[in-house]
Length: 189
View (spheres, rainbow, N blue to C red):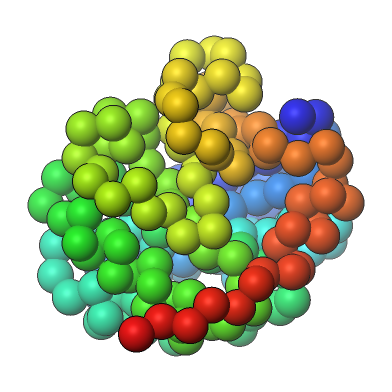
């Protein structure tokens, strides 16, 4: 693991520090009514820096279909973009999580879809171990790449100071770009 990345939302500026980072996840939506007003400019910052880019949706209680569709309606995807569900609201069920990921995978074929959650959610709320194409685990232990779980993971968010900082379980940026650009298509019932 030699690559680092960050995630940004409306709390960060349009132009953020990109030196030393290979990837970024940008918050796009929350529930069915909120859209990050800075995401387009934040995406430009990432693209200008040559970063692998991911987008995430913060889940709220309600319809998984409506939230998945709202999320996808806001973005124009480019090859290699990664999609993520941010699962940290206690009112959002495991079933919602699984179904949202499957819907996004079905509606955005060719794009990797991952689950973001903290260690507590993964160990105590998750009941299926379904994380789509990979698990993005948050565990602020200051030990990059050691999130204290047994399940395979793709990304580890290990601190939120000064920004949410992650490591990717990839040899280098090229390996991440290759993974993100080659999603195996699956069929869903």
